[in-house]
Image (tube, rainbow, N blue to C red; front, top):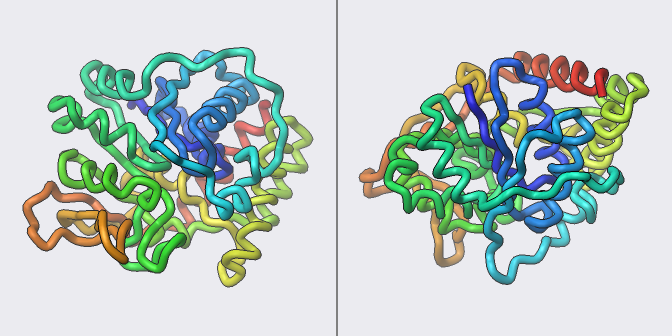
Length: 305
């Protein structure tokens, strides 16, 4: 199976990238860059640096469009650090970005029938690619974003990725034919604690230290914003894991929409018109099986970097 990640590379995006690199079932053919936790430019730089750290500088990274007027929110900088990686400093990447993210996404769907795309930030690039009819009909998308049965995390009704560009996510729900939504309904059930990060630190490798330092920053931020959880949510890596093994989650299939105006802007909810494509919305997750796979894969990757 081929895989493309569409990342706004903050801390859990870094975990998602590591999960993909550590998974022999998939071939990561490229990464596209979006905005959210950081700017597109900073996210692309983080991705390139991480790929070099983990020994895969051959994987291309394509910058995507950034919403006009975008600025990193104060809460995003608090959670992910001002550099997106919890203030972990990596060497400047030796390689540079490739071409257009939107063109790469469209070409890849035309070329690879076994491709899955995993967006873990705003869906701006994905929505732009939907202007290609073949992409809209055939792209298989497993997105991290939204909240159906639980409150949002930036507004009572809105999750952060969707909130950044609700019009884009609404286009994805209404036009893409094969979408799975991995939202806060399931990601906040998958938690990482300092007990696990200590295992990475004990490896004594650059990869292990990077993962541990970034994760400890993330856990510390969650201790302030969501102390009741007792750890940090593994949002983005869960989406990658489900792209590889859909049996990790239980889904409801229903047409979805995003509120794009008014007080509830950014809310992901069932479409009352019921005319759009069915979206598979994850509402249950096998926490133990996912966490086991997450820890074993990232530990193996970190041990060798």
